[in-house]
Amino acid sequence: MVKAVWLAVFFALLAQLASAECVQVERIAIARDGSVEPPDAPVERDGNVYRLTASVCSRRGIVVEANNVVIDGGGFALTGFKVPGSAGITLMFVSNATIRNLTVSGFYYGVRVEFSEAVRLEALNVGGCAEGASIANSTRVRVERSRFSGNVLGVSVLYSSGFEASHCFIEGGFWGVYASHSPGLRVDSCAISNSSWGTLLLASPHSALVRNAFEGTGFYPFESFDLTVANNTVNGKPLVYLEGVEGVVVRDAGQVVVARSNRVSVVGVNISRTSVGIVLIRANNSLVENCSVKGSRWGVLLHGVAGSQVRNCTLAGNEVGLYLFESADNELSENLLLFNGVGLRLTGSLRNVVWGNCFVANGVEAEVAGGQGNMWDRELGRGNYWSEHYAEDADGDGVLDQPYRVGADNVDRHPLAVCHLALKLPEPEPSCMLKLEVNGSEVFEVKSGSTVLVRAHVSGALPIRAVRFEVGNFTAGWFRWDRSGDGWDALSKTWTVKLQTPGNLTVRAHVRDAGGRPGTCSATIRVRPPPQLEAQKPIEWRGEIATAIAFLVTLLAAFLALKLRKRAKRPLRLAR
Image (cartoon, one colour):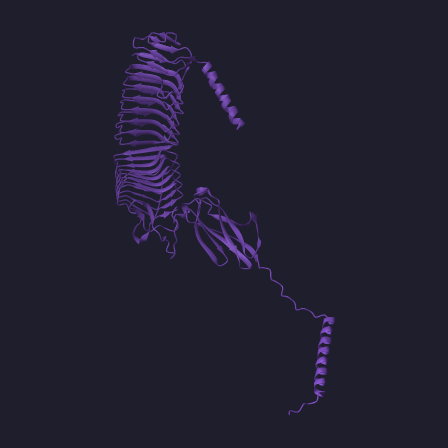
């Protein structure tokens, strides 16, 4: 805590020093007539070239209203105060202007260009902004040899045409380059890294993406066709883009995007850390098989696709494993969807068949929005394995006795008891250890009638799904592993039992992980019988008591004998 406070103080001092080294100006304007406002701003003019002579701290940045000018930052910095809606450089209704050699930070927009044409942004370093460069309603804007790092959005291009970015470094943020309704865009020889969407084209046809290197991100065209996409790499492997082809097979790529094609096969491709691993856009009757996509935003996306198959794929650790958007009559089978935020998402999709898949430890196993007629099992009563669904399999046929409800009108009638793709699951399998406790202390022997806490400690590559306890011949049944406390990461489960029967008892725990794999552990405890009450011994007569009693008996006998003699000597009286 103390260290954090000192670091905060240190960075605050650095910020104050930086502010002390810059000229404080509310706003600098290059007016339409070429004049500079305020007159004492740190700007020198040489014809149509305006050069900064010092770093500037400003709330409203530099506003360029003049045409045919060059703003040269001279390597200085323009720093804002994070005012909402503020811009470091603003160009509106301007033509033939150049901004170069400047570091910009601390504004909402680093550079904002609107309703302008023939604007060039050269050798800029823009960071710490909501949008590094925002281009809207403009034509022929070029960004060259510039760096955009640590912005929420690197470069946005809206309702513009003829935009070009070349030899730029764009790092981090949610979007690297985002273009909407901007035909003819070109991104050339740029390094784009570590953003959720490296380059996203929305309704921007006839655009080009060439000679770019994507690292930890990728490319996604949404309703953008007639594209030129060539000589790009994703994580050092080729970015494969196919449009208007038929019967092509793809076997190696860092990302695969297929648009408006037929019978394309993507086989055995291993992809990681990109925006969307494999994208099929209106690519009908196609196949994605034996592929792996990990650590990406979306694993496999089918957008407007019909009659295609995704099978035997491993989709792990993605935001969404498998995504169907407005797609119909496809088959999804034998796939492992593991540790995704959402395993499967269906949006506006119809009559798809989903069977034989393993949904293991996803945040949400599957979600459905719109669409109807999707099936979640096939013939022979084979549905999918759902790690969050637990029910008994009383007859041991491998199908749980209760159906699994995916969403409204979506039911897996034959959920599987075990994931049959066990060879694809991470190792090790589950193992456990039992500890028997009384009053918080481990015990190995108790007296009959004692209440014992049974604690099962588990380990393994996957979280535990359920546990069943046994004591001797008594079975407690299966308990769902508690997810309300420590969630999937809970490492122990407790159960209390009262031990009555004397002898050596074996306590067992049977666990199953999220893949349905079993593990067993046991512990032995001795139950002592209850203490026996000793039988009461008969009283031993003392000798003197016996003698006294005998004397009294003899005395009584003598008394009775004497009385009888006296009665015998009395004369008999005759009756008169």
